[in-house]
Length: 438
Image (cartoon, rainbow, N blue to C red; front, side, top):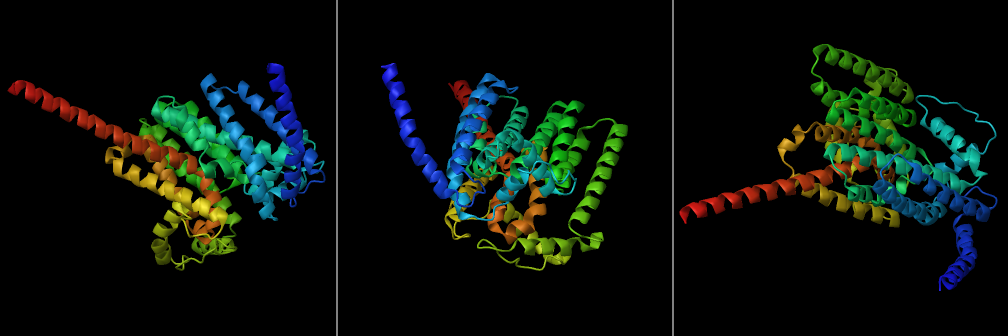
């Protein structure tokens, strides 16, 4: 019986392989590869090898089992559902990264403010053992995305003080997280840096061990090398919340001085990146950047002139909401826009439940406050560009979406748990009163 089953499976695979490769060739008209069939087969084998590597990760057996299940879904998305996306868009940055990664020598080094050059360096390194396979290189970036998500999950475990693998499944398989953390581009790399910083910051705030500042620094540096403005976004909440956790006045002053110095250096690099000659040109540069993203079917013009301080203050509430919760259904007239709209509608409903069940005392938790500040600062930084291009907004949000999902689930569950505790106390009190009356 076992032998017969093996023969049937082998027959199905043998008959299905040409069909699958035919579909890959049909959908891969934009992929810069001379032999798509060989390219795809290499990617399948590479996905199996990377999946096997999960067995050796420094994680618990339960986590490794969950990661393997998530990896199987990510591979299906990376090598399956992503094919129509690649067929639809002929000018993806992924194609350029792949082509330049095939050069025998890396023509550009690494620079602090050049995310494109740094992503190319990562692609070049990852492409060395892959024999010129575009899809295999994409699988490597997908694994980076999985690492970034897992780091955020481990940060959530530190915050909760307990394991709950359901949270890993929820975050990793959330549609936007699943898709955008699997592309060949900047986003999976940045997600690793952000996840590493989140892990370090939560560990530092929960356990007050200075060793957790190492992943904070390493994660922030990696994120900065991909998108320079992520430096202030990640460091500001860490400093604001972390300083209140340092008891020694001398250590607090030293930490504040070091943090301020780093932020000033990053601000100077950011001004250089955006072509600002002085701080007074920041608003004009922000407006120009938003205008540069306003192209394509999901583009829209800013409703006010944000180059004026009054205009920026008027715009920020709408822009911040857009960065976190749009596009909504009807915002982008396309299949991808509809999917993103429905997902954001579900996210908005989850946020409403979390807001209803949360309590002000939750903000006294330093980890909750840190995540809230991270989301607020990030949404301010991305308000204009996300509003200018709702399609790009979906991809940008990957940077904080895992943290947002974890926070909303925590607040929704914590509020529900508090309500149940209050009800239990009320019933206990009533019961005792009834006993006395009896």
